[in-house]
Length: 332
Image 1 (tube, one colour):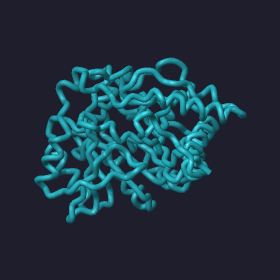
Image 2: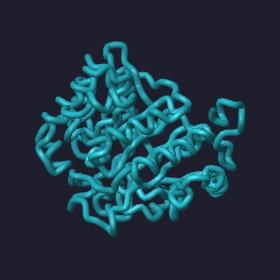
Image 3: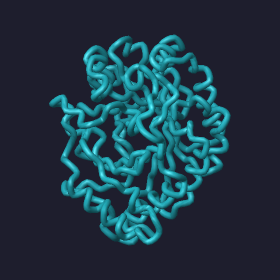
Image 4: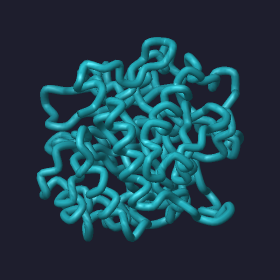
């Protein structure tokens, strides 16, 4: 039984924010070359000593005992790991974990999604930066849109409870992209989410040329009759919008909006087992050394102590991106 279920304090920081959601990177490797993240492709930095399946099980069990109920496996591209099905199964089998999510670029989704669903996957996010085939290829570095869309249809066929698409909001041709995604979710029970482009240490020039505030989508949604919905307690940072003529929804993640960090409910652990208190913070805390037998109490204590140092919010507005080089380090 988790502390939260038992009436215990769960995980909270000095600002009263409660944490129910863990984003766990399982690799830094990515096989796409997205213009906003890895335009030159993945380049190995040191030995690839990523968390093993057993280490992931121990780590997730510790967080579950502290009240975490939702875990998202991310990367890099998590499905480049050959043991991704075992990772999903290990997380899903953890007492207290009710939602097991995966963020993927969808490159092998059609072939494997049924097995991942059988292993315990409940929530799926697929990165689809445009529904125009040529623009998708230009952004991601490969002509893979038909295969990715086939994988999304295959995911829906499995009865996956939640399927979402992630698209980075770019200044060039934003409104045509809004229109394409709105048409796509008209008859599909999918949420298409636009994520405001975020500055990182390696993309300053790209950010300056391509960033557009999330308000551009908000204005468009309002004009088209979309209505914002309440956020779920263990949901991510998106605001979702519904329309009476659409089965699906449109979402917006706007990290530059005022008060974005006020409702933070998620923690991040890197593929090497280091706790990150903020995507755009600096420094991290080694949890891997506590993943041996008999270290459960020490691990829980270290996580709790770390939360006392979580800041009120990021400093993106001041141009401070922390020590994040690119989003592939942590999966966003």
